[in-house]
Image 1: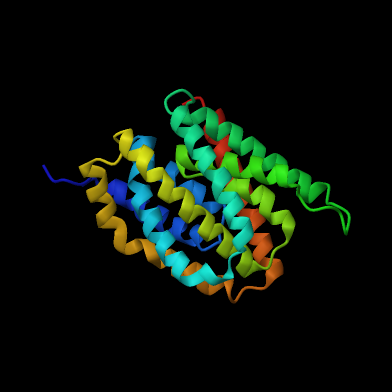
Image 2 (image 1 turned 30 degrees about the vertical axis):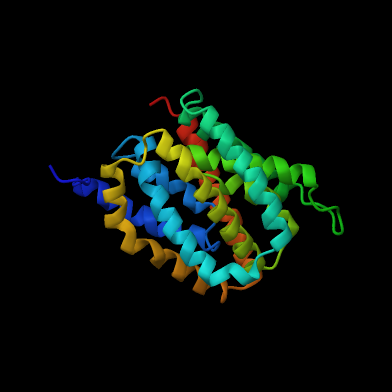
Length: 252
């Protein structure tokens, strides 16, 4: 028996999922990355799909840090990572208690509600930026949903998008934040037995694909107009929220 997954159908969905995740990691298609675990879960259990993705996320984080480290908002990253780690701790404690299906439905509804509020009831010019309390809640939820299904983008984007940061600052801040959160997830994933030999060997096979999406996304971020950049962010969140809500409400 080979030490890695051999099912061709798995790789038919895993390769696009990894590329999509890379684009999301660059910040160019943030929101779309939450589709990776559900895509891979079409062919194997969701916890196993998440375990295979984690080493790939770490490899993408290294690529993203190399490309974007100097453009981050240093003070904001420190605060976000601390709250994100709290969310990872909560996810570890509640592992096996809350079903991924329930988490997906709740997260999808929250994402779509945020979009409706932002797009249908636009804040007046000069209105106050999101508060620090909203920052802590969003980052904690992001850490929690990132632990459960690598779906941490919608909660943190709900806080960051209204700030209207420059595109490069936004993508760099996201990249460093998720690098910290993903690094912390290694210990509980290993303790829960998710990082076994078969999953790690499968991750190793997919590893050469991991940086490609990140490089493509970084290239696009530096060349796409800011208005279109934010439109893509909102489109990604809509698609992600719809998919998560569908997964949560689906009877199967």
